[in-house]
Length: 479
Image 1 (tube, rainbow, N blue to C red):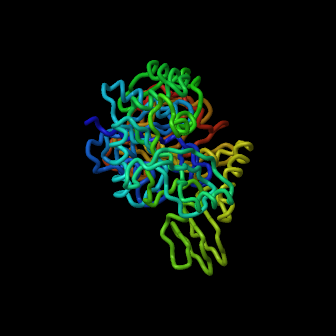
Image 2: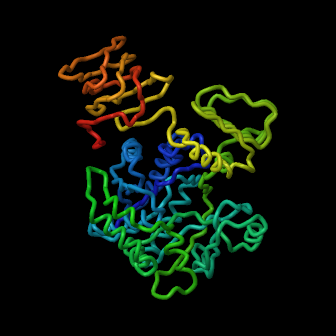
Image 3: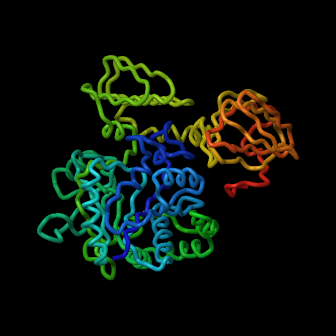
């Protein structure tokens, strides 16, 4: 039997979960529910299925090192396909299917967004096994979530006739957009409408054949992008210019909505109802629903103290957050922003993000603590001509050999040992020791030890932006 290839789509930005989710470190990379990140939980969700191949992740190029590291921590040896620009889910799946066919097989693709929660993973795996059997017969399968409320934040799928007598799978009747409240209530009463999960199971060849007939322009553009790219270790790169010319479209719009009814010369569309505690955790209210709660309906993460509160979500990342007399509220504290919102208004968090972007505020893109392939840095303080950072470097890792035109740097080692290249010198700096990097001098910071290196960096100069870096050598291929 052909292997089952998990295709994990990790391209979203999760703006409605700001300030925890940022463009450069979005919600799928965060441990919102449990100890694992949502990406890691998605990858692990299929463990135990027969014939399971290592996963193929499709992600934004800027997230590549974080995604690869999170996969490594799971012990997975999958590949990462990099999108230089976002073009929605149909091109992402097309690149994955083309790459899979290039390997010489025709696996069944289990296509999962990286930012969903599924509580009953055993039930989900059983549903996937049923879907794989249908996909092997040439069908295109999606999952519809059995609704328990008239939700207006999801699209819906109407199921048609049953494929068998057990009610496990149905023909696709139609897809419908996010409804208003009365329409959603009517769908719930009708009993044949399901929430659209955005999870799909089908052969690589089935997708490519259907796309060729429905959106050949996407197929042509993706084929050119993949053929113009190459492979760099575990990373699969595409031609950026060719992919930028690809039309943007979703899997639903491009193909699945055309598989309803008796679509001629197209694969049969099938929906499997699923009751497994699914959520796309798209807004703070949705996260509150899936988290454990106290008797008063409060969900808390971090150092939170609530008095006379009910149905309130509090996320405290850095400080004590105390709340008194709140009802149906969301309070989220990070190191550089605080959000306070009513449950009914959490969809509007995106409007705040849009306003911040229009004002050029970096808090929509970065956290104060920024992760890099070699470790991380945390902006502790800044003034007109200075900036203070905490820097952590993984054992054996090295920053690029670089120089700056506009700033000098003082380094103080707090723990571990640093190997410093400064001009023609190479020397060690141990705990409680320091060194100075003059403006314009080539330098490099390395951790030669087996324990993490942590240091304080004080920058001073006329310009302190991250773009004042000239790289001469880099272990991570950055320029």
